[in-house]
Length: 596
Image (tube, rainbow, N blue to C red):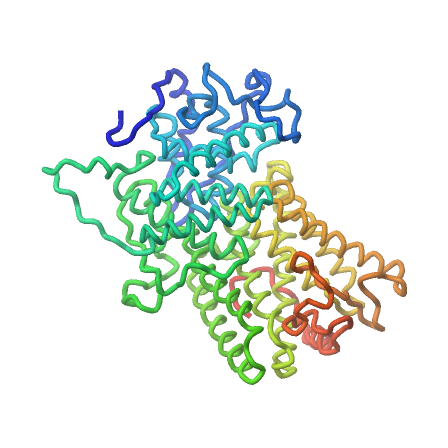
């Protein structure tokens, strides 16, 4: 029994473990330096005929027939907090964990070293309460990406995880933070926004209360002194792995704070005194991190030197970009309160500073994470395409927001036209990436739908797609309407993939479909179309797609939207900007690394 931790699960037979380990031995191979470990398809789900032995006790979900549900009872045990889920149903546990690592841990929230963690799951029969709590939360999140017949199993896992977290009120340790974060992800997927933010907020508060935003280089323990009973680390990690796990716990909270819920950021950049997440290979091997520290403007600059070869993972590059996105979002939230006299100067200073920061980020981005058709195909072969797509979706979303939202009455016409052109440019670049993803998926050896499921993993991509559709389809010259309709359809196809996993994509898909219908009306009934109209040699839409719940036409902040600038009408400067752009022969770039 593990010291200092009560209530372990009973030991279970391991006669099949060698066979399972052999099937995954090829997955232990190391990747080239600074390139993510190769992400693999999850193991094939167990046969339904073998797995289904009884109906589930939870009858609240009608997503799949009872006969198709994966059983939550096996080996005479049922899912419960005092039971190791691997002891209850090994195949389902491994399958859902694989999905978790592919779609969540391998994209944005890289909390665990995949290979080491999976070895621990299969080889450690005695798991403590805290570890089992996190396992159930991981399985619940993995079920988001599984077939419908895993939904009941996932619901039981999330109920167990919720009960466990409720029993740990006031606890600030790493496993409790992880469980809260993962429950926030699950609730986000299910569209329970208030509950998701509650879990996320609790995780963020616990993270900062535990001072995980501070770098604490722990001294080596005296080998003559027995370890403290409370010093044991979870998940079978080594000392260096647990140090990195704590760092990644903070950075995962940071990403959720910046990316998920549309609130002002709770974590201030100057308060982060921490290394960036190290390379995945170093994490797996349990090596001491030599990743640079985050440059918060206070720490010694010599400790923050960042290059394309710095030993950091893709998650670190997302964190760096998210730090810029958070500032853009905050500026947008506050700008409506600035006076007309000071707005232009403040906005231009912020605009220039943001572009300089983005140029610094993009110039240091390692080659394997830069966007190109070759790198997209490469990332699909090597299993990290979801990371590349999510990273560049955030990049395009950041630039669309920076250029679209400004108080246009306080800016001179040339700056307004600059913003309109740049917003359109990055909207088309985002939709061009969607098209490239679909083309690459069709050329893959896997079925197209299966490959798209692997690549389009995060709700962030959906937000970027609908923002791009909203801008690209706001209006244009008569020569562009068919091309615009085509890119809108491309975005719709990607939203349909996300719609299967993320509740937020459902409303995004519905709104984008409505925009497509408006296109059809303009083409078929140009003088009777609703929501849009022909304007001589131009066409335009009256209202934006991105609106707050309970939106009213008269309440929209038209004064701070350069794309939909005129309340109930069309802006002449908008069409002038697009016309000048066309005369210059400018076309959307296929990538997003160079700042333009």
